[in-house]
Image (cartoon, rainbow, N blue to C red; front, top):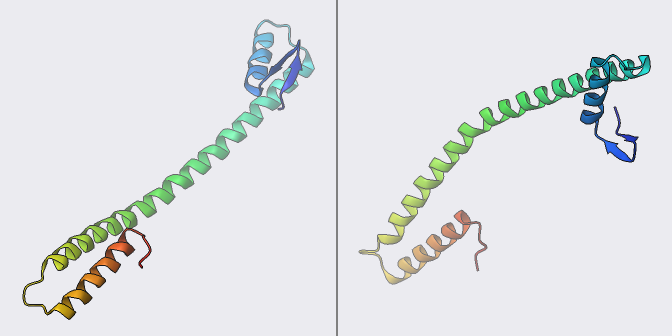
Length: 118
């Protein structure tokens, strides 16, 4: 069902259907209008069915990815905690090893934050 130009106003599909329902209730709908009403209702029912299928597919997709996302977020949090601990452990490390560790920590932090390294 497409929008119609009626008395200077554009009516949406929804408004057109309501208009036709009103005419049918009052008993003044023409046979062609009743056919148009039936076609519009059928079209809207098909759209609702399609949207229900899309929504169900989206729900299934979310149900599948949420556990993986939660697992990844937990792994990231553990990795960040380990990185923080690693950055703080500097006793007994020589200057060259300490510089290498600091560089490694900076690269890992940049990777976790998705920032380029220099």
